[in-house]
Length: 103
Image (cartoon, rainbow, N blue to C red; front, top):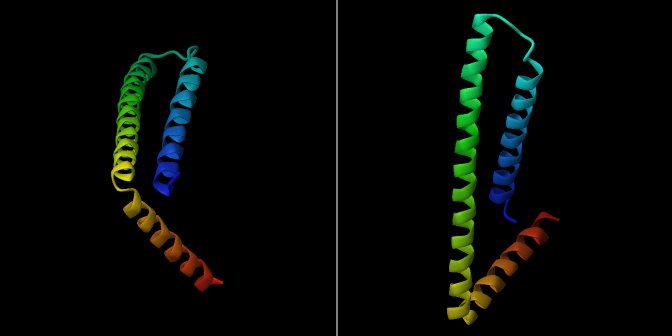
């Protein structure tokens, strides 16, 4: 898994945790009273609902793009196996040189 994918996964996990925490907070504040508090709570619930919907959309887009990239890579490797081997060997050589250089 690449660094970007790990960061995206971490971001999704963090956003899901924020949403869970916010929902828990709303459950724990049901005893509060006052018109201003009720209005603020309603706005917060609306914002939270929108955030959940947007997160679901973003998650769907990320999954779709990842699947598309995997399919495109698979097709390229099947159509160009020797080029793929050459590219992989070149990348391996470059990484090996960089590791050896940093020691």
